[in-house]
Image (cartoon, rainbow, N blue to C red; front, top):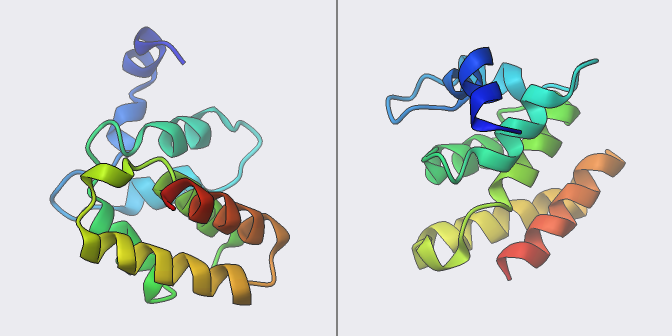
Length: 121
C-alpha cells in the first residue's frame, strides 16, 4: 500500500496513539468486505509506533469477543521486532498467545497464534 494511498484515505488515524484511544483501531481490525484497512493495520501497526503492551494486555484479559479482531490483533503482534521488546513484554506476549493457541476454538485465531509464536520465538 503506497504512502499516498494511506495519506489520501486517512488510514493512519486508525493506528492507536500513545494516549489509549483504541476504538478506531479495534474497528479497523474487524473483517469486512474491503480488507485494505485491516491489512494495513496488521502490517503497519508496529512500524508506525503502536505500543505493544496495551495490545498484549487487551488479549490477555480476553477483551476481544470478535474472532476476526482477535486474529488480526494476534497477526499484528507477530509483526513487532523481537529484539526491541523487553523480556517481560515478550514473555507476556508468548504466554498469552500460547494460551490462545491452545484454547481458542476459532481456526483462523489458532493459525494466527501459531504464526505469531513462531515469529517471536
